[in-house]
Length: 465
Image 1 (cartoon, one colour):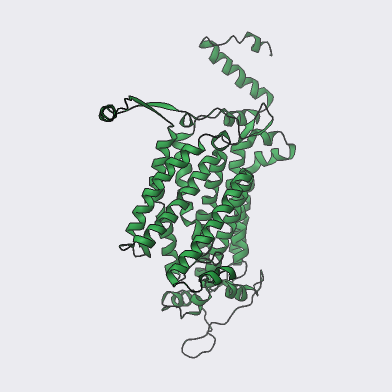
Image 2 (cartoon, rainbow, N blue to C red):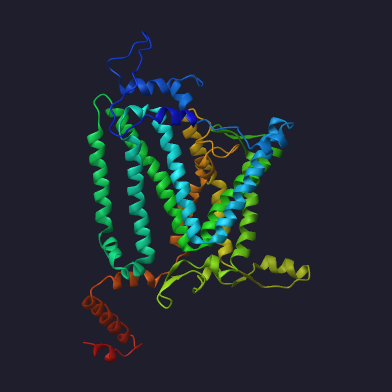
């Protein structure tokens, strides 16, 4: 990463400085520096001999001095295991501290991780494609990240807290014109990109343009799914992230001690033993952690605006039915077996969320790792070891959170499809945004409907006319 900083420190937005492209045959600067030459240089690089490959981040084995002193006499295998174990404990402890601090701290955590992941991926493109010759690439990349976050997070905030926004005068414009502002910002970015195009570099610039947008899809949209899970209830965010962490840890341990059978060529160190062992451990973990967390309203209640309190509410809600104990009739075979052992029982009480949790655990174990395999394929394509060098033995932020992207997207979709119940809050958001005359029209239509069902008498309501 230090080499990246050295190579990019001279970048100036709008600068026309260009590093000459030396001819391989003469050593003289090429008069026609083409896109295809640069891409070919990287694609045909053998090992790590290409200057482009050498400039890309490769991770670091530098560890804190105290860890070095403890592990210096260990074999490389056990040294790696010890470093990963200690740093994993530190990261998990930090995560629990942020969990204790509440949803705002978790949202800030997701945003911070998003920024760092985006930075790591963009730096790879910046170095590998020699884009220091191109003005505005990184500036435009970050501009599109800000624009994407303004749109998708703005939609989320309006969806969750539209009523609260209505109570603040200057935010009414944000609520009313959010989509128009978003598309205007994006169009401005397109105009700036077109103005930055340089002859002989068109292919490279459009490649980087697509590279930036794919990165936005993975990082910004993935972070938005995780943020939405926080607002659905801390339970869902914790379950999502902790299942991946649990699977990663136990897959590593099973692979470390019992692994013999390679799982996939993209990641040679992954084994079937680790894959299966991690899956079983995650399934058990899901049942245990769900039975504990479901006891606390603070964890299972969604974050929403309360009309009674005229503020945000977190620990008071009508529980979703999946968080309420329900009776289940045991199969006849199980009843017979229990009678034999002297424990006659026909029904059992369980939280419905337990079954959902087990299904999600199966997904995180069977499909979740493919987010990591996808990242491994990306790194192999660019011939790099890690996305960054933040965590010794672990790589960068993207190396740690690659599986969270696919898990976050799936879990939020699952919750929205199978768990979430109709929420009057969203309807109220729309109604409160109307003019008073329109609100009265809705009120009278609702009264007429309910009166037709014999539920209320609307005469007192009509007297408001």
